[in-house]
Length: 605
Ligand code: F6R
Image (cartoon, rainbow, N blue to C red):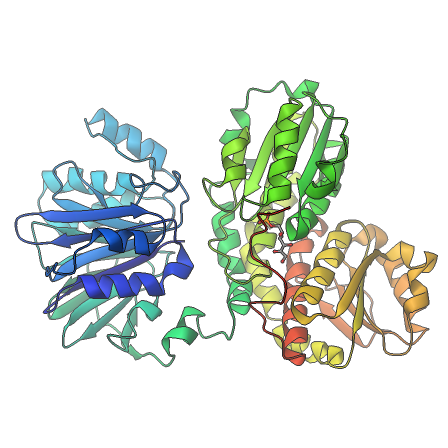
């Protein structure tokens, strides 16, 4: 996720570019850059860090009236000046900003290196400008060169191109990454999202996948993948800037819950070849897998719950020995680990102090270390033997949602890869991989339960306690459902293995106690349902989250997940519980994005 702005018109471009980037910082903020154009040359400034670092480099009397800007959230190449956008060709005559992932960048780079091109950055995006340069040299018509370039790109992109050849023109292309256009008396605009435009215009045109646009001072042309002109459907944008940054939702948490289908799609991008998992970073590890005797999953909070899920899967898929432990315990537990141990660290921020300390201990003992992290170049990412990135983009709400489901997905892929390396056949692998690929659609369907979940959350209005139960792969979902609810609604919420209820916690159940039971695992579903009956008999209000075909006639409140292989049911179930927590917090009138006493990244012990 990155943010793009572009302007050409009758005014200096820089004020728009910078204010637009500031409105898009929620899309990424590890580095930023702008290119301004005049007829003789392109001038580019870049800075690592937040936008304010770039602003320090720019003088206010830069009057060029055409330019493009970018705020970055690294996916390939750590945050640095070199890796910041815009990227230029060697002669500095063409400049490009890109949002998205070029899956086939390695083969394109090889091809361009063979043609004599040089690369300055580690990004996938730099191949775009070099490829464009190579086509433009062959036939100096920018529209044609751009169309030929994007035909070669596999993956996702929203990109803007500007050049000295047409100093008042910006070329735009889009595929699976967002891009909106705008126009006013002052000129024409483009940006990754409407908030960047709203101070300047409310006349907005969302560009569609496969479309291109040519922006000039007082004209804007849209055309399709074949180069044919499209009649644009302009809309008058209804929201103010704040609402638009949240995409019309009332909180970042809700926006991020709804982003899950697309970030899961991004996280899975390029991870499969047919029915095989592709994780070259893991293949390249210098490890003799026959010598690995145990695997330990280590993290904190929500990321720890993702580890509980991975631990169960690991034992199921590899038949090997594994365990899961919170980082804050691992670091003080004098663990029996050595070079025969694989430690997997999971973290959204990559900066959590306890997880980092656990990682240092594991490294000191000679363990093999792998990280699953969201923030590229973060401390945990830098210090492990191999790192896999979730593509959740910046998570602004304190309560983690999209980071969690992308962790589940990526850990699932990792465990399948480990099973292959440990030479253990996974039963039903074809079905599992087919459903992993369907997860964006499955998550979309899970979001459709929102109206019914909202009604159910009403039962939390006057409650101070809630319980979540599940068995096997439903247990981490129960843990995460309870954590989400307590974090943002301050309802005291506990999670139990459903079978443990009768060994103590059932004493807490009384008339109208809210119990959420997750029962999606066929081999134990009937058992969990028996446990629920025990609570209903004591007056509990039970919400059952289960499969489409579970016989649940006896229960009043049932939410059904979409049809999915049981190994992946945790993903739609988590989405439903995130919605439940959100609406529970709304019932209580809580500040959803900034719950009391909590910080987004816990960098102290
Ligand atoms: C809960 C939440 C926290 C984090 C935990 C670890 O919604 O966000 O429990 O999961 O503090 O943080 P990371 O994943 O950044 O290591």
